[in-house]
Length: 214
Image (cartoon, rainbow, N blue to C red):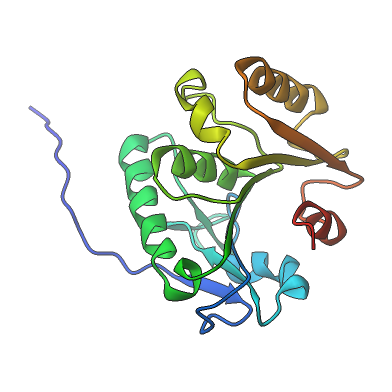
């Protein structure tokens, strides 16, 4: 007979910063969650030009690392898979709670949560399942996770400025899928804004500055 149990273990996670991580009186702290198969050190390069001594970008690394092709070569990270997903979601939420306790983040006047691609689902789940107040939640090249109950989270979602950002040439996300999700949100009573830019499945610097109102 085969049975299953879970053991609590301690794992060391990597967190990367663009900006002054020692400043505990920041104007803005932006938590950015990378996409599938990415590494935050490289992902942050898209945000670094906007980082100043009063604006900090924080990129936690997904807790699952793997070789992206075969058994050697380039390494990427992931937030979760379909396997034991509820455990991974709970672990991610606890992980992000610790990110919010970093002194520079906790002391920031404004807090923004941005998820890119796979990171959008992790961002939405964390926002809806936590008590942390963000001034803005940005879903970039990703949409609302289908397994999260929308009716139960309408009030919570309307406590922040919710933004969906997508490239018109995004190779993974069709415009129809984006419009379908935005219509679903609006019909449920969730206020959200959709921003389009000319580009593919990437972070566009000019659009990022516009969405952040910088």
